[in-house]
Length: 317
Image 1 (spheres, rainbow, N blue to C red):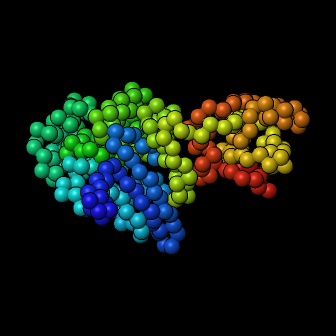
Image 2: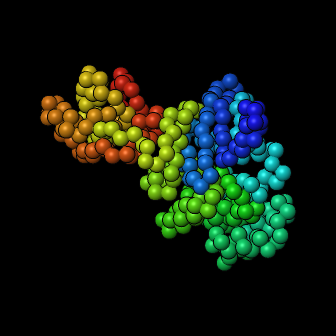
Image 3: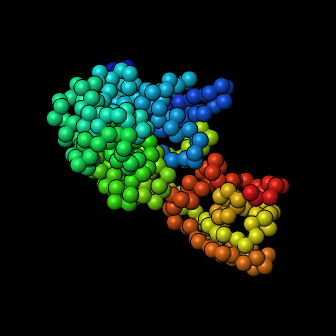
């Protein structure tokens, strides 16, 4: 067998995102985003507001045309799939459905569009826990119930992939637990999940792959068990300005929340303790983050909602 024959027989599995780019009015929103999502995995797509998450998901699902790059499901773009709904289930906007239709009408209409039997509507409605609300108008549903409705529609075609944008929004703790359990079971049966989320604690419990995006670029890409482990300390100082100047003087990297309320320093907690004593500045809190922490990785990989680098000359707002 020749090398060309070997290449021709290679089967591409999973979701492959390669070099996606998108600009609006000349301003880049997504700039060269690439990552892979393997079968039987849950990938958490994380980043601050405005980092490019939703734009990326819209390009992956064919709702927005990329300026460059591609995304493929088992080697095919979503436009090339014979019946996209039977391969990829999508929930990007829970408010996208007609508010005057009932839950049952909305899901039944989606079944017609996808060529699924009407009985599938009842199955999906029951699965997401909306049977008792099936006659209610979509416009009267809470955000959490609309999220469940969107998931019901995403599941109609019994897809192998789920692409979800903030699916836990509006869900109570019980609903979030149910959602995470379902996503984990879906992946364990061989499915592939890509979802964005702001719930770091909840998503850390269910995901096994983490991709962080900031200002349109991927800044971190780790599998569970490979998150970088290095000394880091989260602390709240009584005087942020003096602390941050001292960190800069010593060449210690740091990031901070807006207003410099909470600071994450790339150093162990003992060093922060000694610095506090040296500056005669008490600490309101001190938390070592020497383990593999998604929270610390997120803080160090983003600047949109967190301010990194050196202290600016202006006072914290």
